[in-house]
Amino acid sequence: MKVKLLDLSGQYKKIRKEALSAIKAVCDSQRYILADNVVALETEIAAYCGVKYAVAVASGSDAILLALKSLGVGPGDKVITTPYTFFSTAGSISLLGATPVFVDIDPRTYNISVASLEELLKKKKRGEFKAVMPVHLYGQCADMTNVNRVARGYGIFVVEDAAQAIGAAHKGRNAGSMGNAGCLSFYPTKNLGCFGDGGMITTNAKSIADTARMLRVHGSKVRYYHELVGFNSRLDEIQASVLRIKLRYLDAWAGSRAKNAAVYSSSLKGLQGLVTLPYVEEGNRMVFNQFVARVKDRDALRRHLDSKGIGSEIYYPVPLHMQKCFKDLGYRKGDFPESEAAAKETIALPIYPELKKEELLYVAGSIREFYGK
Image (cartoon, rainbow, N blue to C red):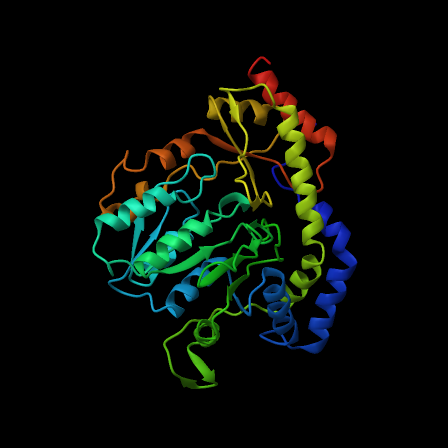
């Protein structure tokens, strides 16, 4: 049996007729940029996430970049985040001339450690930091109740990196609705993915939305009149039309992911000390963009799975504080032990909605075989 880490062909077959019809309608209209589908998608995503405004941009990375710039982040500013995340979280901070400052993660959820955040802020001067960017990693929200409490206490902005977490929730509030701004990615591998790149900024602040809308079109409200130096970061109509169709299926797909996760959890019981399954914080709704387990002898297990025709991935093998491009920040190996341990011990298993139960059991059985259980 072969089980891919991700196979989008089943999803495509389900929506093929709708998607091709929508794309044809866009082609027939000959309106490709910031037209009706983009406007409608912004309204639909805002309603889905529970915010007043949503601004479509060209990618999830651009969503972070424009959200930060809309809050005034620029040269000389410092933004706190974690080193255990995709590169664009910190890369976007650097591109604005600001400095990423890292704190370690909670070893259970892999999200920002609020205790580490507080410890950092207590040691520094008030006003030294502009914002904090918690990452809702793998489809689970960070502890936003306490992130917001700490941020309010120190007068800093909160930008949610919710690239992997659309549909996730924390204590009844949706990802992307709990900070000053939220950032979504529609990369094809995401739970809500388009047929290329795409992203969205979510916010309840009209000033942030208005600024982001200017920034995505070179800083202009009126064509050829520029109030800001902005970017070219526009979601196109074809991608928006596809996303509008997929949005209608999103909750059902998330439900299937949760069922698949339950099969793994049941099938991999009794492997204490060998396999640590994903931990879902009380009060959180997790959408399992990835199913990430912490395992003993990770690299050997991965080779074993590969020999069985099972796809896997490492998210992420090198924490950001150890990346060559961030050498000048002055961090060293050992500075963030939980992030470094996660990078060495975690593995992502297939979790997409179309997986059959026998495929899930085959993956679990192959893991048990590796450990002789």
